[in-house]
Amino acid sequence: MDGSGIRIFGSLRKMGALNLTAAFAQLMSCLLLMAPPFYDCSSVPQVLQPLRASFAEGSLAILTCTVQEGAIHNYNILWFQTKPSRPPANILRHGKDGNISRIQGFTERFQAIRVPRNNSHLLQIQGVQTDDSAIYWCMVESGNFSNATCGNGTRLSVFGGRAVMKPSVTLLTSDQDPSTPLFYILCLVNNFYPGVLEVTWKINGHATTREATTASLWDNEAYYNLGSLLELPNSIWRDSPSISCEVRHDSSNSVISKSLLECNGF
Image 1 (cartoon, rainbow, N blue to C red):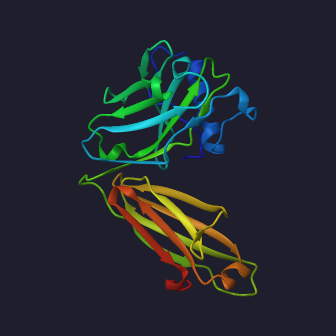
Image 2: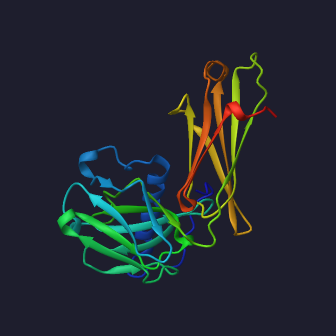
Image 3: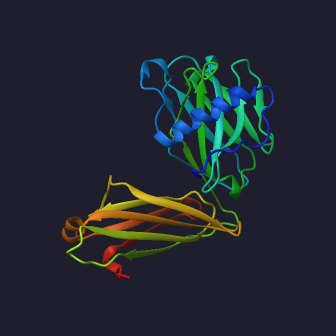
């Protein structure tokens, strides 16, 4: 996500500028906090989205958004798309009155469907393309964004396309000097496409809850590069026989793991 802010692509028909600004403000809260933007959980609907979805290029992709409180027909549903190093893009709004408004650039390949029996909403992408790979966010609100909330987003990976590129992974370390308090490990992920990819740091085979700084770049509109930096107290790396960076890229059906045991310091 580009921290410099949000640009609005195109104009949303049948939706005022004030409401559109509010929608993006709410989405920004969801993206930054990965949680509903209000603390009073009783006042907002709980929204569930699958973590991942994979579909073959050219097929019908179906993304699901389920509401746990209230009836799905009592909410306006908005879908957003985020790609690395790009601001979020609003795809469409499915009003509780049944009207569907699409942003310019998103054609009728993107269809919105309510499913009352499951209290859910579907975003269908017809003839899905490799470039449709992205994180898709569902926002639910009952009116004027007074109680809007988002799901945690679904990572859509499209496989089988000619443009797909499997990533290469390199692990680099800072000087392994026991006298310094901190130790740094850099996981470089290069030349992959599309840009939906997950990096997990593991210590002794278990995913670490420590924060890692991750940044992605898109070079020449052909492939992505990504770097993830893990900072550890010196005592942890000295006492841990295995520290690794695991990279998952579903479009190329790749899971690549690089261990610190294989790495020489730079």
